[in-house]
Image (tube, rainbow, N blue to C red):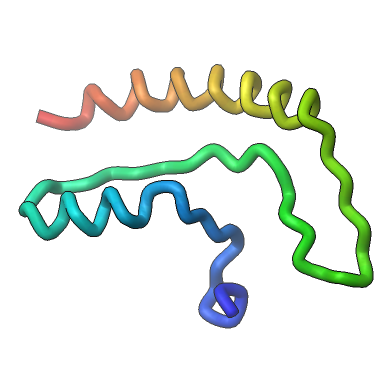
Length: 76
């Protein structure tokens, strides 16, 4: 369904926290690191090893760290 509204990825890790923060009047900036593909097609078998997910997370984490350091300078 999310693809029909233009979504490329779907995450559920931060939605509850953001909803509560916004109800409290807190401004929120969020981003997520996608580390593995979800198999959404029963006809296609997608296998991802735990080691592969950990490696991708490490690589994405290094880039995310640089991103956060850069973007923090733009906030008061």
